[in-house]
Amino acid sequence: MRKCRIHMGELVWVVLVLSLAADLVIAVWVQSDVFRIEFLQATPAVSAASLAVGAVLLLVGCLLGYQSHEEFKRAMSAGGSIDHVIQDGLYRLVRHPFYLSLIVISISLALLLRSLLLLAASVVVTILLIAEARSEETALAGRFGQEYLDYQRRTGMFLPRVGGRD
Image (cartoon, rainbow, N blue to C red; front, top):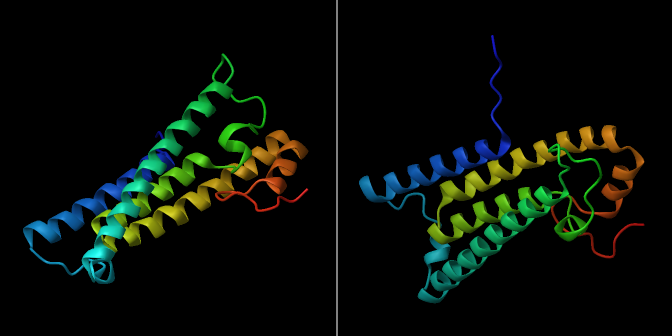
């Protein structure tokens, strides 16, 4: 029997889409604001700020995801594998820029829709991606040894290190 393993990126999108669907069904069909983040709707200014920040984060998340994907593709060998630790471009700043993009996108959706369900989904997405990143890092340290450990020490997982650690 073949074991089916879902890719973490697919799981993240499933969590977000299901949360978005549940939020929309409750808001539109049931006509309830029970899962709205009320303080983000407190005044027109707060509401506008929530939408603006959410829109900017969505754009940043999408651009970050696209750029990190392109940098990863460029680093691949002709055989489709990675034979070195990627340490340039976005990977110079953070070890998991694509995962960071997914976290930023999930937070942006919570702000745009002012949704507690999507905020909860953002927390779930972040936990899943941290677990996946740690698993990958164990494998990368085993594969690339000291080179990866040095990179890991200098570079933040999802946020750039301030001042760096050398």
